[in-house]
Each structure stands twice: as structure tokens, then as C-alpha cells.
Length: 138
Image 1 (spheres, helix red, strand yellow):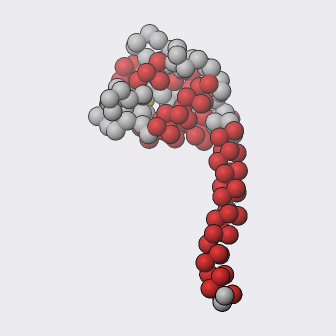
Image 2 (cartoon, helix red, strand yellow; image 1 turned 90 degrees about the vertical axis):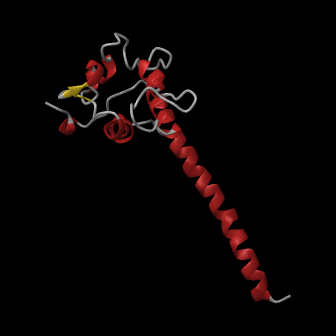
Image 3 (cartoon, one colour; image 1 turned 60 degrees about the vertical axis):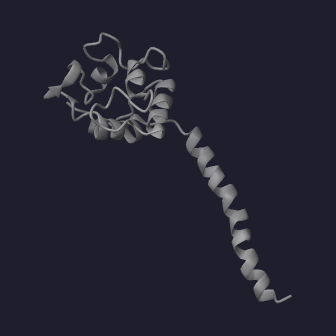
């Protein structure tokens, strides 16, 4: 058998065997890492929600640009986010699609399932505000 031919055929297989455990370890590390409001959740809300839910344009009387108001909710009277309690967190009902449609964001595609899962994980972990002091609104 030609050793050069053997190497060409086995190299991709060996590379896959070496890299697969490394990738799996990275996925497990990410899955076990705490969700950051500032780094993970806030960007989702900025991109998909805050255009309509900000002080100058508070649809549903809900402001999502200030953490305390984000948690409190709007004119529904229900708290939008109840730390550690997905069932009582009204925002989950609004962003979770049924039959491919979600109430929020309106007139836009629903959030991606990975974004919804990240928001759920953050709420389950206690919905902590880890915004650095220098980045908080005054």
C-alpha cells in the first residue's frame, strides 16, 4: 500500500476524531455558562424590541431600555419578567410562537428559538442585571 495514499485518506478522518471532542467541550462550556443580561439578552432586546418599547415610544406603556421597567412590564398589569419563574413571566407568552406566529415582536419575524431559549435560561437563572456601573443609565 502506498503510504502517501493512506495518509491522504486518513488525515481528514483523524482530524475529525481530534476536533470533535474539542467542539463538544466548547458546547458544554457554553451551555453551563451563566447567561449575561448585558452581553447576551440586552442585544436581543435592542435589536428586536426597543424600537417600540422605549421612553419616547412606549407601546403598551412598556419600556425595555431601563432594567427596572423591563422587569415590571407594561399596561397588561402582569410583570414582564419574574426572576426564576418562567410561568409567571409574561414576556415568555408574548415571544413564544404558536403556529409560527408570536405576539411580539409585532410586524416582524418571531425571535429565533435560540434567542427565546437564551431569554428563558436567563430568567430561570434569576434574571440578574449585570450591566457594568459605567454603562448604566443615569
